[in-house]
Amino acid sequence: MAKRLQGIPATIFSEMSALAVRTGALNLGQGFPDQDGPDSVVEAAVAALRGGRNQYPPGPGVPELRQAVAAHQARHYGIELDPMSEVLVTTGATEAIAAAILALNDPGDEIIVLEPFYDSYVACIQMAGGIRRPVTLRAPDFRLDTAALRAAVTERTKAVLVNTPHNPTGTVLSREELEAIATVAVEHDLIAITDEVYEHLVFDGREHIPLCTLPGMWDRTVSISSAGKTFSFTGWKIGWATGPAGLVRAVESAKQWLTFSSGAPLQPAVAHALNEEAGYYGELRRELEEKRDLLCAGLTKLDMDVYVPEGTYFVTSDVSRYGYRDGLEFCLALPERAGVVAIPSQFFYDDAEEGRHKIRWAFCKETEILEEGIRRLAAADLHA
Ligand code: PMP
Ligand code: GLN
Image (cartoon, rainbow, N blue to C red; front, side):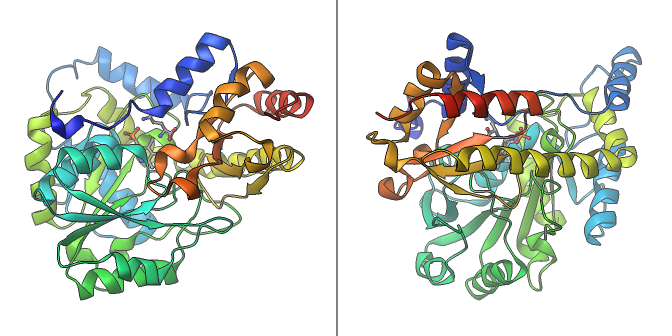
């Protein structure tokens, strides 16, 4: 295997989902909902499949989806986009992230990332020959440490990769935190790449604020999102990158050599979802908020510290008191002890101590599944 891939472990999500299948345990690990999104969106995909939308679509995306993404950005955030030059459709946010990192960084460039980081960032930065500079969101609040952000900048820093709402901590960056990032980005002339896939999954009346809407940020920001989380179709892998034409063109240059184009019949269906199904994610957010409360209440009764998230599918807890060497050991014991699978967040950290005993639990599951998971955890002896 080439050096660019060495040292990157297999994605922990696949490993833990395979463990769930093997042991028959409830999967509170990998973040995918167990109920599909709206029927009308499935019907739109079926119509596209039957209606001859099965050959290569335009590389940057079908016009109706690019228009729908632009309309969504205008409606929610007041961002006015030219659908033809400022919107690029990708194979999930994952491809947009990879293409943006490859397109905008040279080998040796440093990229600031919020730690714990979504695992594909680490792999993509390494494949691009870049160097990651973590800025750690620390328990219990997982807020942005502005001084640490400033300290992470060097003369080689090229970009800052910002994930909000944040996986795995559930932090939704506040306007003040985003302003701090914007100030640093402008001062040091950095590019910003934002991962906003959980943009609509924010709780307690909070608001997601796209970094590109802050003063000085539009010209330097590639904003990324996807239909997976917003419409509960995580397997469809339709995402998008938006921003000023020059940056989007650069991302498109990389995308054309990764996949050339993305799922033809799913694109019109996602356009339909964005145009017609805003009510779906309004409701999803309310349901997830209740599920968050349910799972957090259940975990709080156990011998662990629980950090209530502001958004996303996930809650983090600290299991130090159970006496395991680390979270992986805890998670490997969990199926047998309790019939439940969770994700050890240590894989999302460079700072081994900070990540050692953090566990990520997904609550994007049916209420009965969550209740059963909580029952099992409460009944089990989880101590090492
Ligand atoms: N970013 C984050 C933070 C995620 O949690 C995920 C998982 N869905 C992705 C990106 C990937 O999104 P997609 O499935 O659209 O590729
Ligand atoms: N985003 C999902 C999660 O965080 C998993 C996606 C994947 O498996 N790559 O659980």
